Picture 1 (cartoon, rainbow, N blue to C red):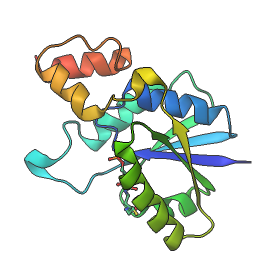
Picture 2 (cartoon, rainbow, N blue to C red):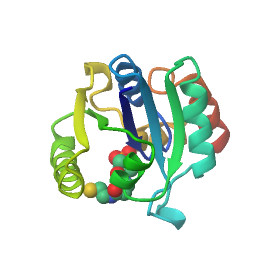
Picture 3 (cartoon, rainbow, N blue to C red):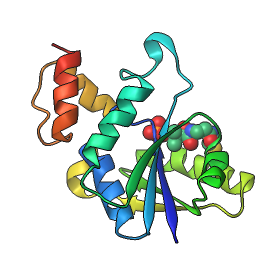
Length: 161
Ligand code: PNS
């Protein structure tokens, strides 16, 4: 049984995240989408609560039978051990992601040599997509159709109504 973790803040989940989760689900027996509680609180914290973010990821991935969603509030390596995941699968977008992902991968490897990290390259249409830019578009009432799953579009429209 090969189990992968796809971690993130998912504030909110985008079509780019969904692409990575879908492709990861084709590579392993089970994917656990790990939704981070986020260390940032208050006005600099997430737009959606942890419960809301988990619910949106659950709805967006409901059609994928080997995907489940779990919140976590600890080191990723500890959570991976808890759910018995042997690999972390993350999306890699434009070159700007590289430094940050390289740092996290190196530190996670130092913290736990048994946890592997793998990357799936974003397809061109999602290369520059991020939760932050999606929230900005939503706040200015732009068309979100290409960027997020329908349930997230509805949730963002409600937040910025
Ligand atoms: O979607 P994001 O914000 O890029 O996700 C970052 C996340 C949640 C994957 C990362 O911050 C993380 O793994 N947090 C858990 C705490 C942890 O393990 N930190 C040390 C990483 S070396």
